[in-house]
Image (cartoon, rainbow, N blue to C red; front, side, top):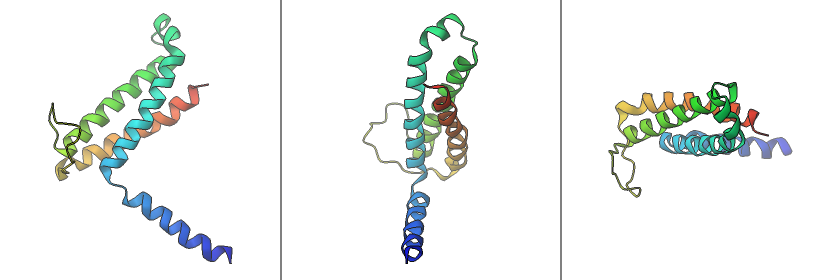
Length: 119
């Protein structure tokens, strides 16, 4: 009986994830990465001031660069330009879809890597 209840629930959950827009995936990834970056910067601030080439510091810098690239790709995908109001609705630019997908793929591993160094 449980199997009959779990299967539809699993299909529903997977469809919710698959239906999430590319723009929303980008924003969720950027938000998660931003939180991980902030926590890592707080924890390693003094260590990175002393030794900026330490492994954790290099990882933090790469994560910041990945987040910046993700935000830029999201802006391009939505057709935003500098000064676009935050309330503007995203109008997807299909030619920028590949770049946004790549930016999401590049940024996602940094969330896990930063969480691993945060204690």
